[in-house]
Image (cartoon, rainbow, N blue to C red; front, side):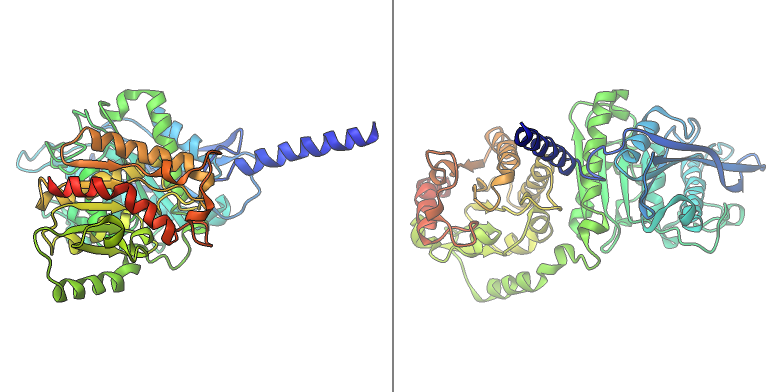
Length: 513
């Protein structure tokens, strides 16, 4: 009986440990409740009516948290620069959601109002300018009182909705040289403003843009802070693309996502197909959006990202080598290109294995779809390939920086778009990401990403998908060891022969088209 009790105790403890490890701070909700402190004055500034206005914020912290240095998320509400307050439905949802994940969060008020006295000027721009000044003062406030609130000042992020997002985007990416000429600096001061806490930095580590837009997407430049975007594709108030404008704010979430990829800024994009502004104020959709934000923001934290993150630029030497090959080699119009990560790079006998002689072989090991998105023009545009085949398998690897399947899918669509800009009808094929023992723990997520891409390929012209997992999984449903190298990840020569044989006929068929 005593042994039975001990055995039962071990099982219970084991279950408890398993559940604890499954709940990861900053990714999952790990606190049941929060503490809030309301109406803290963070600054003061002259408003549109010429009066001094006290600027207030609310702070939310995980109840019972003992950590002393925590990332901070500051939320800036929407309302067209004329309405709403720091106490909003979505703002509370976001602040509470992140606080329960272990962040410190804050929601701020800022000076509202649009000057309509001069019809030749867009008062929305000046309203955003004042809101930016106040937002910067709030950021400085938390740097000033970091010890009071237990904040890691190197991890301050901002998030907004609608006009609040426009404000966040300005805070992160507008520089003094970008300030529109219509802004009366004599009246309102410099971009940094005089709303309070001068002498502290107003820099942020990243931005979450919820259904906002920018005056000029080119404010986003190489080396800028990361950006995550969320919007409904049926938004009739603020554009998710650039099909119309909200006042002078013409460039929405998807345009900003593309710009960030183009200049090598870490980014993400979660579209809600058919949803309107604020995701129709639908709590289920907004909860789903916050889950996506949290998954993305986790990959941007210091505990994951590291101090010397080079991002896409770590591959400059590899792409320089491709540039040299492009100058040295000549390919006919019958050549096809294989582009991707180490599965492509290590395929030494690719021409023999697929039975096709003219192959432009472009693999760079360790690359993911964000890397391919940044370099795809340099890799593909110098050629006129008859068809393009892609294998990129490093976005979901059972690691801390893993992307969600929907983010892998959005990156694939972007790469296709860039290729299509120059080659509107060239066949593009996704080679299914292969199962492997090393990454078997996330095969379900890899399969989800594969399936999203497969469905997209099947519903769009000149897009193809070649499955191969059935050739590498045994009767037990697990990877067949004999086809893999000692690293339990990459194919060995026998594995490459199986892969080549599997896709050979399809390659020839697609190339003929």
